[in-house]
Length: 222
Length: 276
Image (tube, each protein chain N blue to C red):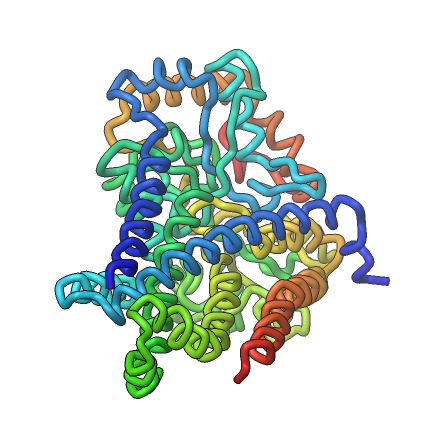
């Protein structure tokens, strides 16, 4: 069969290397995004006005500049100006964490502020303090609202990591292109088979997240 | 609400830790660039990872190709071992940035020397030529004059398009966006010939019997050369001398035979691609 070259040991090994790099960058970035994003969302929802302003400024500056430009700024710009060299994978993790944190922060803020005011007022009337209100009243309700949007963000982070090829990091998509070009003379339809395989791989990377999100939503549903 | 502050402090600390970690790769002082490479023990070369036969990664994951072959020799002559080289995969659009920011010592990613690029990087002695070529069925079209009043396929916006629109308005151009479309159209007999970079045509003609690159070099000849960071005079001088020596001793021909000849076949005169 024409597409059988996909299942050659060397090809599989190379695709696995690509998957590893893609996962390595996206999983670490997602972890940072969750922790820093939750912290930032909290700050934006309950913080003082100047700290809220700083968060807002950070969020907007990440949002209006394309991710590709950020990758170039961190990878090339940083070493041009300071002479310090950041490895491409670290640079990617920094950029995707910064992006994830900003978006996750805004999602968290949205989820927290969407909880009706009477919830916290009622809790206060019952004698709970601020910490207890946040942990036992606001947070459990906010998490359900936060889940779908944040899973969407994580799948976007996984898919957007394909940009890192431009700063010399060989991720899944780049490995695919290399495999296509090596085989194109031997197998004219190579691109169809390789891109088809990559399509399936991205699906299997992102789909478990969707399943997880659905499960968690059910679990935390009131 | 005290504890949100703890959260934000935690966040800031994480960010700071990241930054410090990133910066800890200590800075190198401005030194003579060759001494710096020798001290590092590795020559960093930016090459293509998906453009056979010039620079590509083979099925085992090793770098191969014409550019790579020459780069390995550079490492051998500079550091005494062809394994003391680190290939950095670059994309066409980011080649200049890799040099400017010092991420690579040399770019050998089929970098065509142009006036615009010369303002931002320094090109060494060229090691390859590229010009327009014309491919036709059975090699019927022997020179440009035979094309007058006939159909010629070009890719929109390429050098071939500009060259023929400007110099030969009497040739009817059939323009396509994609390489695949253009070559398919030629195969289907929609035009008498097709014009493109000769380095690409040679490979295509070998794969498609019945088609011959009947005009192998046409128009302005461009050259492909290794590039270094603007002002990196030590490395530039060394490269100039090295390439002169390699060309003289026939190493470029050897590189051609090892990497390009299997793709181009024996009908092509190496002199239309390399310097001898």
